[in-house]
Amino acid sequence: MVSVAAVVVDGANMTDLQQAFERHLERSRFFATQDKVVVAVSTGVDSMVLLDLLQHLPSKNRPQIIVAHMNHQLRKQSQLEERFIRQYCKRNDLKLAVAHWPQTLHPQTGVENAARQARYHFFQEVMKDNQAKILLTAHHQNDLAETMLMKMTRGGQLRQLVGIRERRQLASGTLSRPLLPLRKQPLKKYAFQNHLYWY
Image (cartoon, rainbow, N blue to C red; front, side):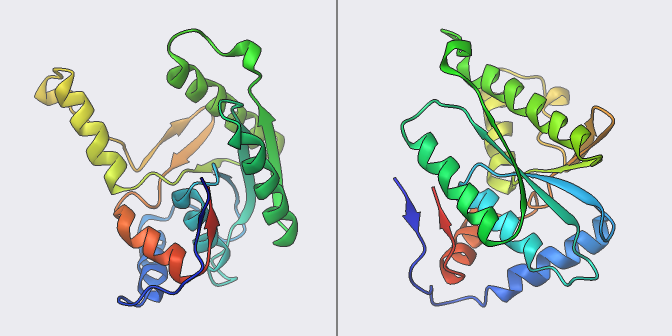
């Protein structure tokens, strides 16, 4: 089901989120101006907000954006999502790389893990093809809490309960998660107020 942001949400000024994002980027130095960055975009609200925030950075701070979208072919909606991101990137003059994970490669069990491996293999190929050293994903604070909870329920030792890291090595580059300090609710409010569309 498509969630369409067609109304302005009353309350907090969502330029605050843009400003907080910019301050966080300055402190953490995820990338330098005009660096090539691959942005993983699923067309969900989190990744669409990340993409919009990056596009609205001041030109002196904005990286060169390459959008990477994996069509997992797991749902009927997958084709609509791919069409949507193709149109979005064309409209916004963004470079786009799309890959398909054919149903013939879907395993009988462990689909989620297999999909993740296929996705990150694709992201690394996009980085290599574009000489980009940075991959950005839209993981946020709620994802971190969920990961920690899952590890706890699976009986992880306290010393092993390391959640999602803000930055880690990925092949010869870096995987960075610039939204990690943010909660999901402000991201959704930003999406509504800025009339973003997402799946």
